[in-house]
Image 1 (spheres, rainbow, N blue to C red):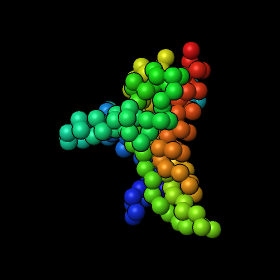
Image 2 (cartoon, rainbow, N blue to C red):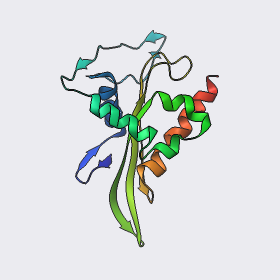
Image 3 (spheres, helix red, strand yellow):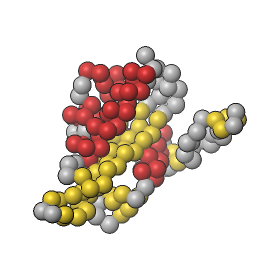
Length: 156
């Protein structure tokens, strides 16, 4: 589990589900596999959240465009990805070890459908790193950026 703030804990899957809910405006079950044993995975309809999300979405878009994750996604190879990407960084101080302050850092968000070639669905994600000397924008967001850049290259 990762620390979110100072007293809350969540798994990366739970944070990806939070991002999915904000991105699509409703709760949905995770879809970990597209198919298993030749059978398509069941798809459930999202249950509406019943709250306004426009400001949250705008804030998460701003994190990628000009906020704490902007430098991780600033390269020209990620220009197409950046257009459909929204996210949130986090840094939770956890321990001091040998004179170093260590944190749990994370980046969670979603990629809008069609951002990558042959990507018909919204893709929610979460990455976290424990015992980091950096921030979520400095350590976890670059990990996601590397994964998305490799997906962009693989689908061209």
